[in-house]
Length: 115
Image (cartoon, rainbow, N blue to C red; front, side):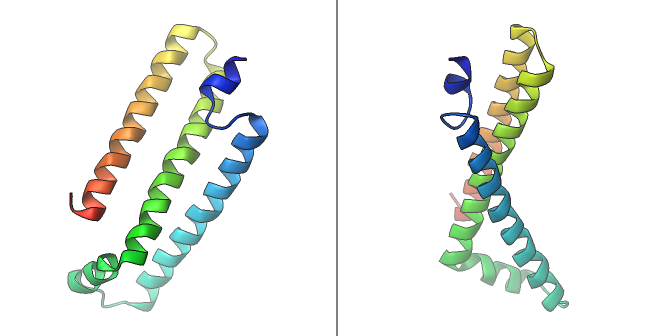
């Protein structure tokens, strides 16, 4: 079955569960960052850097980056299979999206961990 080969999970149900789990994690991460910014109105670069120098924050951010990639891939894959019917343009769209997501993920890891 084509959907089990090209989708992120093993089936539509797994894709749906991954989409929801990543949405929750991204929501928690966004809420944390928003609250941190609101409760630190005079935030300077050193405080921001001190936050991201902590291992737990780097791991939390890495999980958010991975969640963003998975969430975006499932969403864009679903949209492309629903609305782009010809195989060639759909494949090209998926390759461009996958390459962009991979590039941003690698770039995010480099920035986050200083690689």
